[in-house]
Image 1 (cartoon, helix red, strand yellow):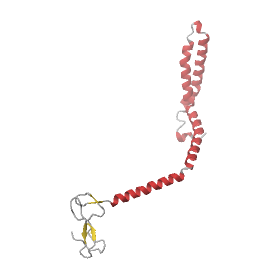
Image 2: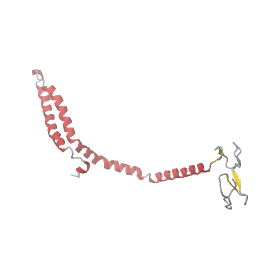
Image 3: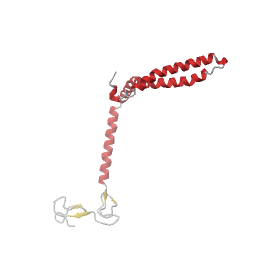
Image 4: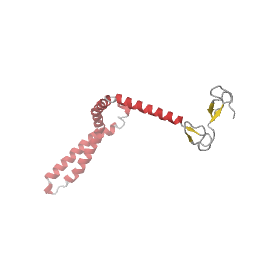
Length: 169
């Protein structure tokens, strides 16, 4: 058997062994009492009524005793099938997933670039048109002219982007 201690599966081995022995014994006793009660129903025997709960208890005890084995068997039969089905379904979709991921990435970059190209007024923080030279909300100029080279610079620039001269405040 595999290394069951790795998953702590043998922690309750004494309880499991007890359920595997007592469960079938109680189950058989309950069935025997039901059969005896049915065959002697007209003689006033109540053995069948005692056998019904004993059959249930014996069934549950047996089920709990073998539950781990049943679960491992079920997993060993169903997991390979699930794995094959998953691989089969994904086999034809690898390229599609790649294309979709690429499109999402491309659109995400475009959206970020669009957001970064939106200009706002440094005074009133209103959104500005791309070609605006003055804020149409508060009238503040959006550019500083360099006194050395006459190049227009952003209003918050300290140095000219063309000649590097310090801009007047």
